[in-house]
Length: 120
Image: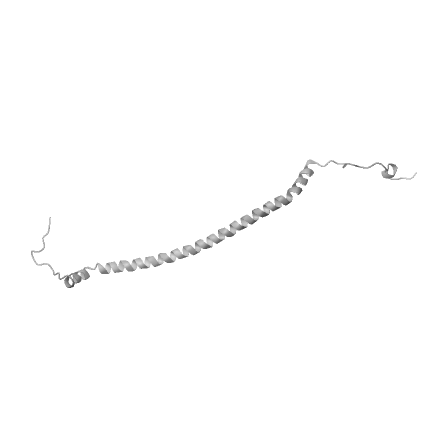
């Protein structure tokens, strides 16, 4: 006897469905693979948004650094100007200067005895 395969004995025999039914895990994997381009696109868009946010934050940090430096320079300039004005005020309030101006410009003189009255 000749040993031949099953196809030669029964030529009309065909397999129309898979021998093993796909498990629910395989179906889930198929669904994930089909949705993969959408997920990849969404993740890519999220990555782009996060990168843009990082760049924006870095630019804001740099701009705030420039503003802080400018504010410090202005503070130093204003402190220097305040010190100069305090010196000028001290000079203008000097009692010797005030007495000199009173004598020269206003014609005032020191009070004589009896002109000064002390109030209780």
